[in-house]
Image: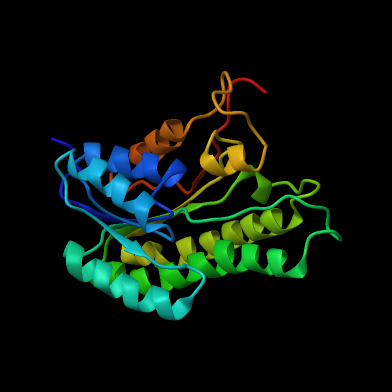
Length: 238
């Protein structure tokens, strides 16, 4: 029996891509899952797949960048799930454009979603984990948060911020038996990378969302005395 069976998880951006793969991997371990996103039809379809794996699965439609929405929806999710043990902050957006050509509104939206959204969701989930003196928070950054690259300045800035926020939080809540893990994957074949034209669908030897999900599950299975502080996932082929 999986040591994760009957745990409760919230995954933001859980309807597709990395979030969906993580939700499916969790369900296979017997974890009850709540997924969030902004497209109800996508979330409904994913919940049906999760329920077929024999776990409780729910969805909630809201924008992580809107704090009022986050407050009400996170409370509702925790009430419906019957608690929360694991938070995966996966929701994120990106856009390609030079520093001067990218519209200020686009730059701001990326920061609002990727940084403030992660902050809002974590702020609302954290008290539940502190109350039970145990939990796991997995924050999805990127190799773009380790090194700047041209034409994705907003995305890089947001992912650098995620690393700083995550490491600060990790040092704050270790005393509460809460593990905060920051992941920095290189380019994964996901809906976002395909839509941005970064990868072609079916690219050979490219990292897949399932690889990412497997890493998360492995980290969660470590004994509570051990914590995977950070991990970078790379393809074996450049």
